[in-house]
Image 1 (cartoon, rainbow, N blue to C red):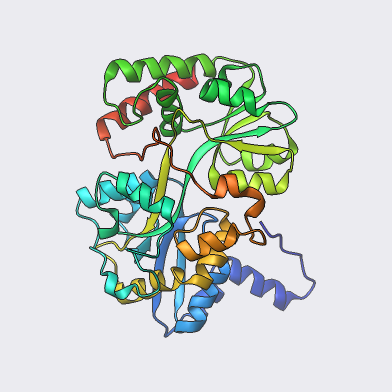
Image 2: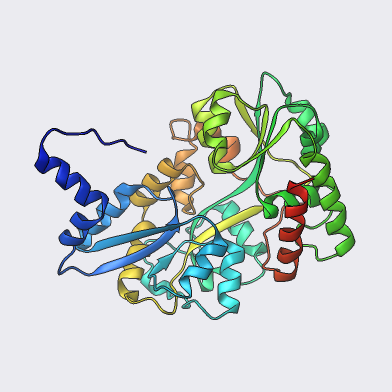
Amino acid sequence: MKKFILLSSILMSSLFLLAGCGIVDTISCIGKDSVKVFNWGEYMDPAIIKNFEKEHDVCVKLVTFDSNESAITKMKTESFDVIMPSDYAIEQMVGEDLLEVIDWSRIDNLDKTTGLADGLSSILESVPFNLLNYGVPYFWGNVGIVYNKDEVTLAELQEKQWNIFKESYDIAFYDSARDGFMVALKQLGYSMNTSNTAELTEAEDWLKEIAGKSNVTFLTDEILDDMPELKYDLALAYSGDAIYLMSEQDKLGFFVPTVGTNVWVDAMVIPKNAKNKDLAYDFINFVSSYDQALLNTEYVYYSTPRKDVYEDVILEDGEFYDYIDAYEVIINEHDEVFAYLPEVKNFTSDAWARIRIS
């Protein structure tokens, strides 16, 4: 986060304070149309917003969320024009009749038939509903293990798979019931979408064994600060975060267990209660263009949905050539997309509380 320098000028200080409160932005937006965007934090290059505002002479109001669940709760009481949720959350939104059907004739910067990256197309085929009816792909990826190559060998990772988290290395495990149960269920040979109580209980026991070890620390975004400093030997990580970490520390590598993992796609959707649907389409179309998609993927580090940008950034002179193993998401036969299963979610949430105190 950028830090402001205290200025001696009272006028400049006042302007900074006004900007921090959003007053300057509000004043500059008087008389202009606006589009309200609801996105994950740090999940879009700010230059894209500036570019859109300049090209369309409008204002973008960006609001952030930290989980799909909180986003769904808030969208029911507050109006947004564009939201960027994950696949299973979109499935829930569709089931609750919260979303507009996407009119792809208004998205002329991205061809949903020929313009999507090959791996993304494979993921979309695995989603348990037609995601393209309700969303325009934004980013996609998978989940794996970031590891210190000086401490952990690739051969050991290939042998132990997710069971590497049971070893005596210094380990950072993501503090998330959904991700935790995915790891356990895939290692045990089960579907991460299972509703079988016996399988879920076995997964809970697997996770309790890890949680009870003194060498395991449960973290969230702190991993992004700690891993470049090599505070841990292993960490559960999303592919885009893995690329960022490897770009910060060349001793780090990324491994995706072949017993299976979560592959996912986030998409831009338009809620039924959106106040400016025309600008929502304009914004989605703009973000989906080649130039903006390139800016975005180089800023966020996650895999772009655009086939041409995707292929360009992994060329030898591309931004992600050195991290191609993480950026080029390869879909394994055991990989899965999360489905929206409220009963399972209730079980895993309750179980996670038990696991964290074990």
